[in-house]
Length: 519
Image 1 (tube, rainbow, N blue to C red):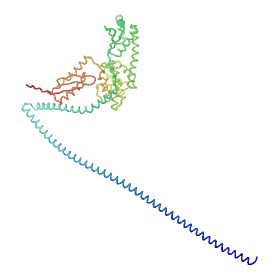
Image 2 (image 1 turned 90 degrees about the horizontal axis):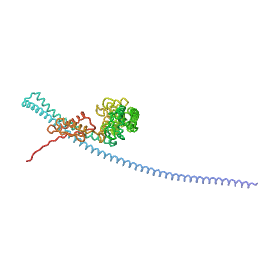
Image 3 (image 1 turned 30 degrees about the horizontal axis):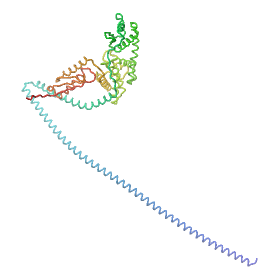
Image 4 (image 1 turned 180 degrees about the horizontal axis):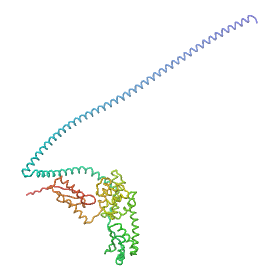
């Protein structure tokens, strides 16, 4: 290779190197420009985004500020309304306080006036007392001068005058208190009794006190009597009854003091008549069989009564005594039906008064249990019944109800009062009891005689079958106040001296009549 070629190659290489460096520099310059442009673009974008974010932030701040301002305005409006309401309430309270102040002022004036009037009345009363004392002294002196009475006689006369005035004041006070009590007590008592009686309706029960046995023909009378009366004597001895055979056709009457024996004899006699074989041996056999059957009937009646009344846990002996009441009557009212009726009415009265209805039911059912044994023991049926109930484990309320339902003792237990009230309702309702004419007339006469016996009474009339007494008081011998005391005393006399079913209303009438003749 020649030298020129090498030089050319070197030169070409140098040129190429120079050109490469220039190209590199140009490329670097271009890259730098592009980087600067890209950076500028990025900065512009960042600035735009920052501006956008700033605007968004400003908008959010403005929205938040507006919302807070609106919330503040709402709270401010609420506070204003609350303050307005409080202001109105304070105005009302202020008006109310002013009204109360005016009322208190008026009341103070009224109190002052009342105190002044009271002081005047006290002064007037003191003055009148002084005048009365002077008049009494003058009356004593005048009486002593006119009548020539000694001081002790004048004192006695004055005390008698004061006693009359006291009686009048006592009568007025009694009338006033009775009227005040009646306004409350009568309404409540009537509500309780009417509600209880309306809730329980019982049939009217009235039975005869004699037992009759029908016979097929009059020949049977001779067979019952037997030869020389041996059959009838054997029958009366075995049953303890009296057999009455008279001219009444088709009927034989069985009479006995004990109703159970009378019913046993009636059943035995019917069996003998049906059997046809009537002789002493057969009579004893039938009577013994009937006695056993009667015991079963009595026990059954007692169990049915306890079950009907809903009373459980009774002693067997008490159930048997209850069954015996089925054959006992009082003023022709069946005692067992009466006891069941009293039990239900007592229970309903207790229920109306929010008391123990079950205990009242038990008291009412067993209150007359002594009537089942009063033929076998001495004393009245309340005491006999109380002893029996106590003996067979009944509680003190039940025992006391049996002992005190006729007001024979001081009643200090409420269930006894309820039982006595129900007993009176059952005994005095229409159709429950009947009296004979002689007894009825005698009771009317006793009522009128007691009333006429009081001083100041001119006439007395028993009406409403003895349930009401009309008393005519003399207007010259009595006053309106003393008439009230006479009425109360007559009622107390009836309670102490007589025995009667239900209650008796006493009405005292006093009037003044003036008569003139026109000529």
